[in-house]
Image 1 (tube, helix red, strand yellow):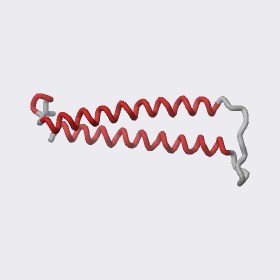
Image 2: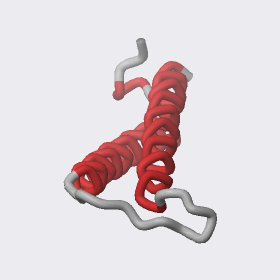
Image 3: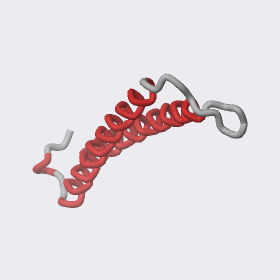
Length: 86
């Protein structure tokens, strides 16, 4: 692997940008965990016009978001590794 001193300025900036993105994604994942915990503590649900539980739909949507955040983080790590080798 290339050491940081061997990287061009653009590559170093790209690595820093990608590391910053990972930090923001980590924070977003922590936020989703807090939202999921709060939803889990609600003892009831709200039925929408289709008769489905609105909070259950929110939980499913949140789970989908968490999966997408994890996937984005993996992609960023791959790009960061590529940027460090270029």
